[in-house]
Length: 283
Image (cartoon, rainbow, N blue to C red; front, side, top):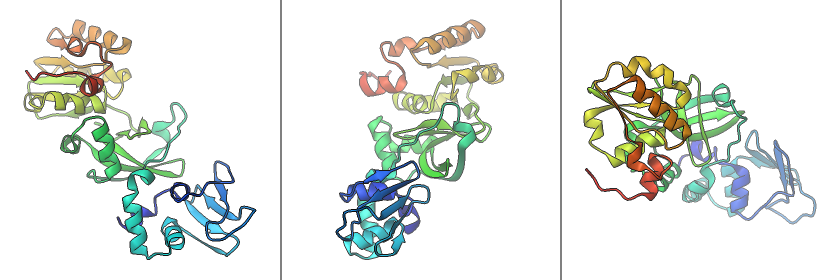
């Protein structure tokens, strides 16, 4: 754990973990009874926007590292060790977006290999091996409405990112298809990031025989036409819902060389639910 990473942890969540809860709060700030002394009126302010605290009673403030040092009476190194131990608790923040706002409001800051244990735990909860995720995805840090978040990211053909974490499913601009190509004669088509990862877990050899197309939204299916025309065989692994059914039937009708595989996971909403709840015999 380094200082830059630790300073991104939520002060209000740090206080919650340390047994302190707000007396009053709004969208922008929260007020607490001081954790440093006894008082009856809250004078300890946390700015949610800046992620900084200030105790008006003692005239001191700072970031989350300063807070832990003060409350725990410890060194910066010991504070970092404490935050590292609690990383999964601090790391994910609940993110709320208005419908349709995702691509307009998200700014990408950092793209790197997956390292956060919180993301690794999320992958394990969906039965995706870390190495499989690292083959296709990155850890993406982004800003939305002046707040910082991070998520698993799958890049698309236009350079935008599909973003997923425990609390959020969205994308950055521009929205597009994702294509993983090694110039194989066959193509496997799925709807989303976790469909892709689940398919590879179920059928590891598919990477050696197929290129992989992620629609990222069935509304983008028409953009796939120039890609689909290039393949000798097309294997469809779309969702078992009305949208997946309609699109599968449409594509089978337009491309005689395509195969609808949804019957293989009948009774499950999609490939990841099949992976989580179904039985599987390798073929």
